[in-house]
Length: 189
Image (cartoon, rainbow, N blue to C red; front, top):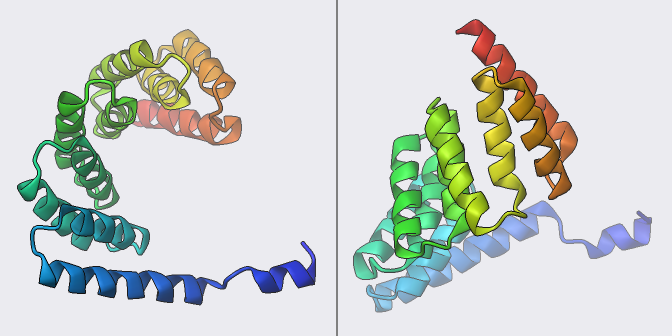
């Protein structure tokens, strides 16, 4: 990258400063209209980007209390729960998101990943299968299935799912490292 081009890119401090200003502006909006679901949702997303997941959870929870039929709110709160390692709450929210929107492959796939991280390998596989039925060209469900297969010692299935995950765009190096980790974890138990 040329030195000239680097000058045009905003620095991290200015990005964070702009995000903090937007949080402040959204807070003023919420103060003027405490029922503004979109303001809570937007502020929650920004707080998540600022690595303030507990505050994001609070905003998504408030938004959900106002509009409990919005699957995206449950999905976003589930992602925030993942960041604070509250996997059972994340699973609950991903499940609720998918109940509201049965075609939400992202919610189902992330539920599968949370089940995998919770060592519920059979459930992770079942949820991955469900996501694949909806969209057979998404990489994450195959990746989760490969990890769960590896953790269960199902090496051939893990290889097949690894190949499919890579075919649909999952980074092979990252997935390879995760599968090695799953194998080590299996051997330690």
